[in-house]
Image (cartoon, rainbow, N blue to C red):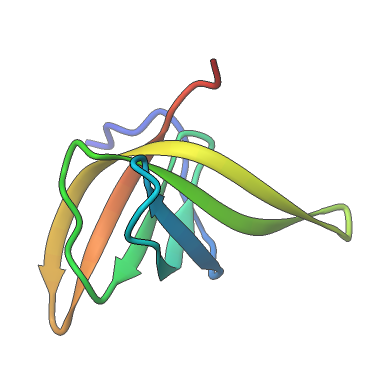
Length: 93
């Protein structure tokens, strides 16, 4: 049974991940996207529960826009030679 609130769709983009402390930036590749979260592939592990900033580009009606969103790392799974990282987007304050 599916537990997610929103359906995930394939979404391939470079995503800049920056720790909430403003250090340790890395570039990941996204795998899928929904209104509430995203899955990405990383070459380095990240900590579950850590709050991070994500920066990536989306196209809205042919108009590219850069999004900056805060997210929380929900899971990290080792997969072959990389890590699959799942995040939940946090509500803006």
